[in-house]
Image (tube, rainbow, N blue to C red; front, side):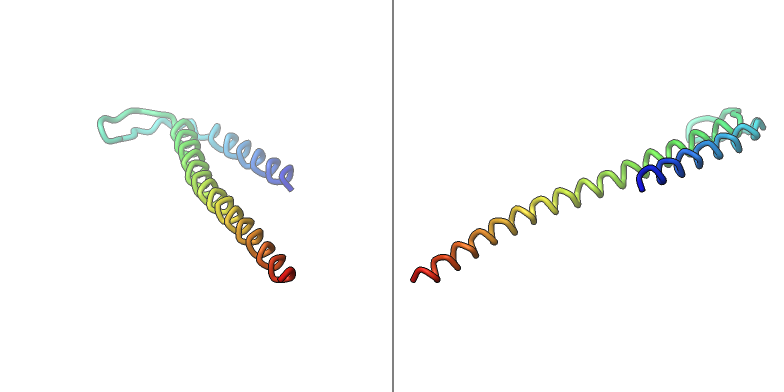
Length: 94
């Protein structure tokens, strides 16, 4: 499954490069402090890479938070399971 996703992602990236290569128009881009003339393909690539990086950063931080919560809950469950087994063992002896 991971291979299929990787191939799909790579093909999407290559298609976006092919489409971006066709956009050689010079555009005037006004940003916060100044303005500049850039090729449209360059701007598309910059914004695509920035969005992709931000998406990975946000999803990665959410995944890290969930995995840490899962690890903490699993330790708590193991501790409670051990206590329950100890109580069951003590009740069978008495």
